[in-house]
Length: 238
Image 1: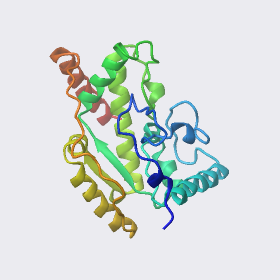
Image 2 (image 1 turned 30 degrees about the horizontal axis):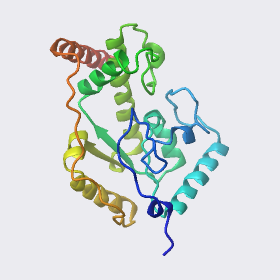
Image 3 (image 1 turned 45 degrees about the vertical axis):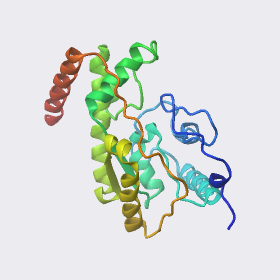
Image 4 (image 1 turned 30 degrees about the vertical axis):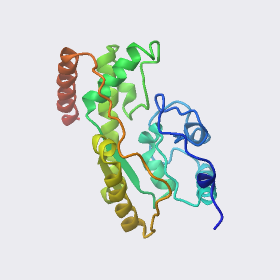
């Protein structure tokens, strides 16, 4: 058979710096590709946000990727958290992977980055949830809590709109400690939902390292937990 590019160039590794990789054949989120059609600002995009012409162009582009690599297109672009309904409109047969992780650890990690390596970064660390105009607190911890909390809420709501049967849920720690079993479970999920058999093209590491960095201390963790509980109460009243 003819070989796709994925067979020609050896993958360099799985390391990244806040999602950025250095080698052209490392995993990449393809953010700049998506920016051809979606807004530059990482804002939530409701259904019918982009034109029918853009839909056709995206389908043609992704189809080209799949032909080159002779494989299904798999992408993890952080900003697509807020584009799920549009991605579903563009690709009505698409399947989705949702990775769950302790929200307190996520928030502590973001706070650490914004107070050290990314000091001076805009107060919005990543994609903005659908209610971002209502998030007006200038307190960094509260702002990050709301960003993470309401982004997760958007994902949960939009996942229901797509159909829970098309969502493959997994835990971050499980993926890191037992990637083989997670990939095997995903293979069964994909083949059942799509009717297409997958084949192994490359080996993956036995394990990936889980971040054990200590952030902020117990006082910060307690404050985050309490604020998240307050957000739960507030969201229940909306």
